[in-house]
Image (cartoon, rainbow, N blue to C red):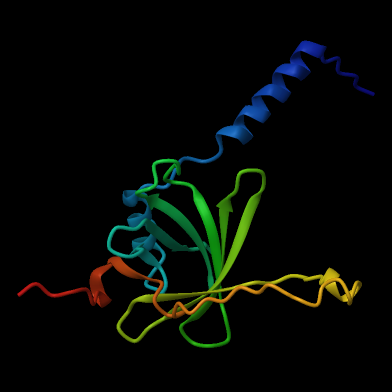
Length: 181
């Protein structure tokens, strides 16, 4: 039987190095790296670099290697200076409807990370449309005390759901932006 003695300092050093590797994470995604991945993994209708609105963030939606219908979403550039570009911000999965994807974005809250879910549809002109949805449980405490909570407050939103979207930046095959005359 072979016995190996490892000192406490060696164990602490190994633990600190492994923890530092977890904190550093992978290299940040750049536009050049995203273009190389898009070119190497083949054409997909959702895969590409997209710009959210005229002055919005630039995201890369990249197909996952050795997977059919799964995508990773990276933030490449953002006008918000508090967000570090190059990190993975979400994922998407194809659904049973052609040109429709179920996406989940991770937002950074003050205390906890908040996840937002969207249905992404690829329109006929090649742009992306986002519709948010919520998933979870909701408890109404007013049902337990019926005489105290007869008046309820509710929110309403009249903003159209199909105006949030993205325009393809790369590859430019289906770009349908404004034409300068």
